[in-house]
Length: 206
Image 1: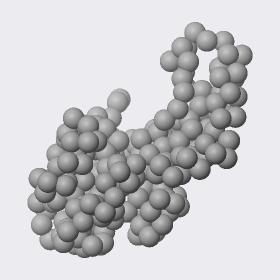
Image 2: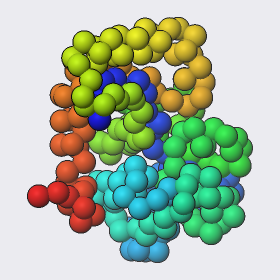
Image 3: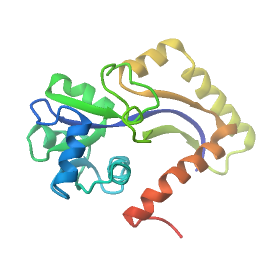
Image 4: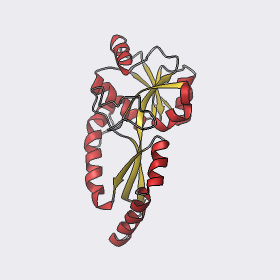
């Protein structure tokens, strides 16, 4: 397949139960530094966006935490709510669905997410983390350049619709605009961002 458009991403977010001892990200980091390996994070799958985010955070914060993979976002969130783990690397969308049952400590976006105006970004707190689960449209690699551009143009028009943008923001998504002509540079940038963490996880390609 060939990627022709990226239209939004679901920012990674650290969530804890509403009654958690961790009121801020600093409190969580301080605990992790004082108790190497004892802080547990749930997440959706192994080598997933959640797993990569957790490992990236460990590296940037200088901590060692334990990742517990689950079969999806829902069971990973349930583990947080049931105190099976102390925290979760989740997404803003999942946190939004839980309402007051969870506390969001930080979100992985360039700017604060409108759905969580009081929650700081990782960057605000000194950790250079942005991203999450990216979503876009691809076509078969056999598609002509004309078809690739046509599909990109159609998705771009939808992505620029004010009503659509508002719905995405209300749902906890971050809208991005990466058309076909910018895709190669976008993917190269993502690859560069992930390489160091991939090496840390032992999944880097030679």
